[in-house]
Amino acid sequence: MEILYEVHNNLYVNLTNRCSCSCTFCLRQDRDRMGNSGSLWLDREPTAQEVIAEFARFSREDYGEVVFCGFGEPTEAFEVLKEAAAFVKSEWKCPIRINTNGQGSLINGRDIAPELEGLIDTVSISLNHPDPEKYQEIVRSRFGIEGYHGMLAFAKECTKYVPHVVMTTVDTTITKEEEERCRKICGELGVIYRIREWEA
Image 1 (cartoon, rainbow, N blue to C red):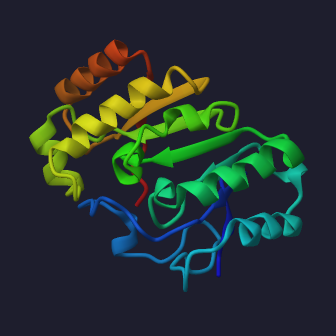
Image 2 (image 1 turned 90 degrees about the vertical axis):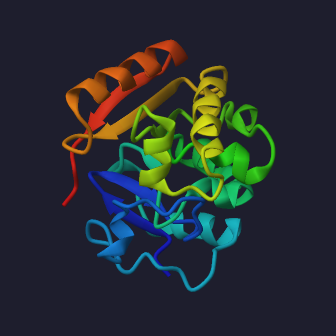
């Protein structure tokens, strides 16, 4: 199984194929790999020990960051994520980022933001759209509109425990006016707003 893979000089961790969303733009719809990875569809979810063992195949000096982001929402495998992140933090001493839909607290049935303290350096959350109804049309969360509100609440909570909290939209997918509304939301939450390039 492809548990670790390289993209943009970073090492990515593929923990799960589960996701609380079924986004209309999801790259999984027309590809099974990223960068020079093999197929990111997992036969089963790896254990924390299996994830940790994979790091022996790679050299810390080659990567700027370890990113929990595969073909699924990483907080769906939150206990494994925390154990693997603790290993990276203690052994690799490497910056750690989570790319997430921001619905991790809804997924896990509790506020998980405090559990990120000391483990995660950056949380990057897909904001996607400033309007709750349009957001739900795009991401098709199993939590419905609550997915939007839960995502914003998670971002706000993360600012208490994680040094860098970023919310993103993808350029060309929303209007400039909608981008400005997203920028305002991020300002109110106290997080960084970033517009990502579309990956074809």
